[in-house]
Image (cartoon, rainbow, N blue to C red; front, side, top):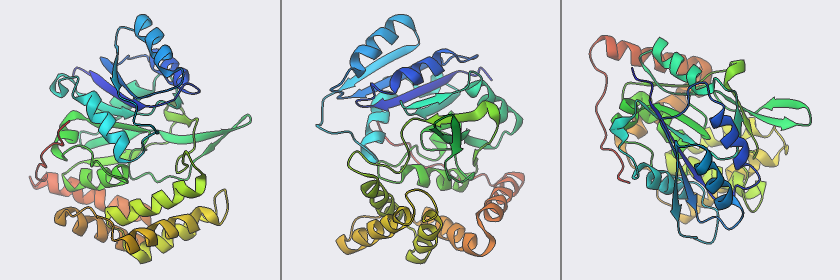
Length: 316
């Protein structure tokens, strides 16, 4: 294993945060072979920050896209990701990571991720856990361990290609974990001191408001195929995080708006069968036990020589 990893960062108007991410990447004990930063039409100081970084770090390459007039989320982020992927040959790298531009992390972050993958040959994607800074305290975001966090998706290239890459739609970062298992790999987020990822902008928020961000989350649950009873259970769980109550209500409202508008859904029969079985069993067994069960199934399939089929990779 050469341990050559590729970072791709879609960003727009990240002047308040991007230098923190640049400093974190530059301090890595194992630096990236290439870091492609896709400037998705920034109107603030982001281009100037990137210009200075390119002069200082030879592994950084900037891809600039035209200003679309707003900060893209969901499918727009993945469109920008693929614009970065188009600038390289993916086969030149052992690992590929979609990395947000509003993060801080430890110097051994990527080295440790590669160590974990070396220890477990079926680990297809992995990340640390996400934290928010409140004064002098770090508070962990309420995210599951059954998939790498959306802001840091570190993949084996083999796994990324086998599952067809990312879906260009909202909830891409939920679908990918299930596609990972469906195709014979295990996704995970690990909690270790060296793997703490500090998020400088809270997940599930929006450029307009936190409420709009939660409604977008609900629409994403509709797109990825969640049943309404499962969304209600998840919304109840989210009511106990700040801002209390509306954190859950917004998810339900967004889901119902998608139902009423008859928005499109991710129509992949193999995925839907797999995903809905996972959600149903999670309600009865809990997510932790269900995830452990599904991961055992992946290992058993490999032991029988039934690793899973390959989905064509999304085109850049």
